Length: 291
Image 1: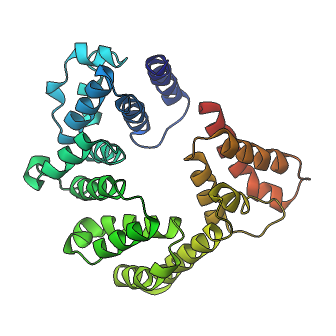
Image 2: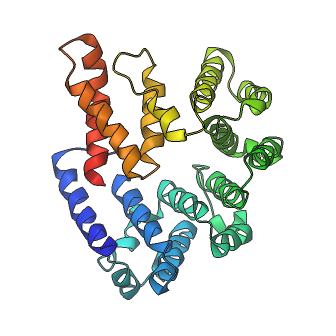
């Protein structure tokens, strides 16, 4: 089933390229996402998929043979297209590997050295390695308080400043999204050290708003759903965040909440409020169709 979806997805994106201009490397990222889904299987296909992701991440595209591609449902030669060697796509591959909780993924990320990445003028790839490794280590921790302490310690390490502070940004997002009220002091310090002036203060307010939302209920889905109100005054950034968080749950209950919000938007009379929310409605409907 997943192999068939990969093939269908490939055709869909090539057709979409004719009709409109997708975001940069949208096709390549989505294909890697599907390969990652295969890698979660504890069988031979899963092992092949994670090996393919590792080769893409390291830029070793010539080592991926057409037979290997066929085993995971891809047209031979697809992964040797130059787009898969771009820094953006390789960084995405590293991040996906970091989402795996397997010992093999953690072992791979632990062994990767900066020299293995090769020249990277974009400074995208090595920060992605650090984020992936931190994410893989985080997945091994069950206690929320210990998770927060681990992330707080990471914010004090020198590596968080590499590549424009991408790792620090990722860690702060993790803390904010988890509702880590006790981490607010170090969160504010980290943001202000990297982003000065009004933009930094705006980032802090956005984090505080997310923490407040997550704290509304021990049921994360209910807390997030509380933001999705057609008669509310939540800023668009917070609405988009709540929608994304619900999408990432990949659960029927979360999808039902998204569908409920989109339906309520559709019932609004013509107004500036409906116009403001219509873009979000289309985003939700598009995401639900894909699943």
